[in-house]
Image 1 (tube, rainbow over the protein chains, first blue to last red):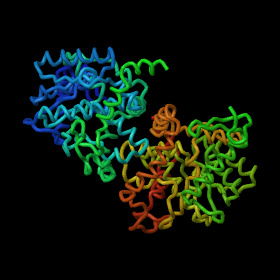
Image 2 (image 1 turned 60 degrees about the horizontal axis):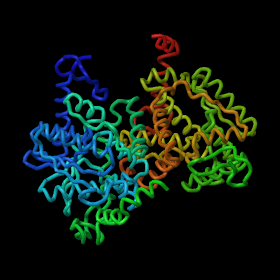
Image 3 (image 1 turned 90 degrees about the horizontal axis):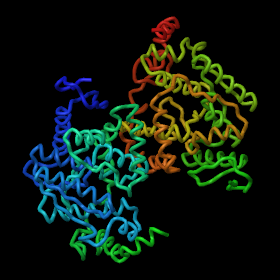
Image 4 (image 1 turned 135 degrees about the vertical axis):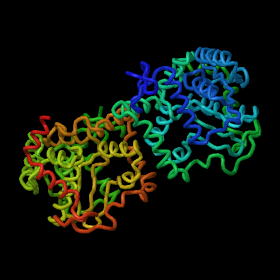
Length: 313
Length: 313
């Protein structure tokens, strides 16, 4: 198998593109895919300051690496979630990457800075761990971007992630979410712009990118996400992709091209209208206290001791 | 495990309904599901004459059986597709069922009545076998219904079939087809009404229905459909259903409830406007000769000898 671009021996085959690449040309390919996504969806300009949400995994570190190579002004934000050994290890990878690139890594630690962690936040708020985690991330990434004067928050959601979320929303026809599933969410009402520059690259490609680029990342999945529905959706889509290479990309991009607009009017009102500053943190919210501050309050009140007790019940 | 309805020993568990039934109560359940679908989507009234498209498989024979039990005026139509031993066997099952119920079975045989069969029709028209077959069925079922004075054609598409077709259309966001994927297609411009009364029952339920009712049916799948995409979509959805019982039903019925209308304006113009009678058969068509007559013409011209030659190449 030869590299499509330079005819050297290929190291990776991309069935959906009917192509194969050697290491250096694969890096070029990945950069082009990010460039194309950034341009096509007008994600950001070279002057803007980007805050990359960094988990220590292949996607976020790979994304940060590509953006730096393409010359963008990209800093990282690492959020310590307090998920035991998993969080300790992921922080190490994020810091090592930042140090190797002499890049700026902002750090926020839930236990140290806010007095809770995802396991007890989940219990306290009676939300699934992935829900408590998502809520915390959305709030804190946005707050850090606002505080740090960033124009945009970039996350490492790849094609598999977006296709799986789309599949989940389509399976239940969550029209309100379908109307907001876009690679760019514009800034509005105190929320900075959010972008997903990896939508044109899949999981395997991001892993390969990190390997070729020599980026060490945490390989294990978050232990709290095990067995969640999202992973089931990925498996189902992978089975379809295996039979029809390109099916996953078509599913996501044809949605954007042909169906997304139909659902737009049904989208969650998002952050339109009726917003006021949270009395605790000042973030825009529809209530008096925002969902994040409410979660923190309950988690802190629950305390770490209840967590052990609840875990043993 | 006990029957939900009568507390006798259950013979089938229905996870998505969190229920189990004994044989007689399962038959009652299946009838209720058909009754509910017929009523909810206003498929037909007790006075109307129904032509059931019968293949000899579990779905079409089960459907015919339920309709007769519910007192509907339902005749059967069997189409001999000329797919070797498979067609011979399926005809035997269809005839045996009709004889046992003293029900009327109309028969059309592609080789004897039209001079072609699905294998050479597929070659001649350069269509996949399932495409040539679908085209032939649509035309001939409709023609037979018109000729016989039937009000409606009923097909045995079950929940798995409809969910798989929906999944296939969603995977490519075929908006024109999504706008027409309904359990009832009203009569228009020379086409009779088409209904799918089994949309509330899945494959396993239809197989169980036939077993409990003692209906012999052809178990093997059509040999020409092997490995087609549709079967892949069913497998993917089954994997999702396995994790989340009810996911498949929600996918289909939430589509009808929440999304179908959005796609309606984008539907294939269907049979609206610009239609004229086919110069060969008189069926409404947008061209001079309808797609069916064109298929037959090419298949007959190709002749059976070419088929053997092509099969050996």
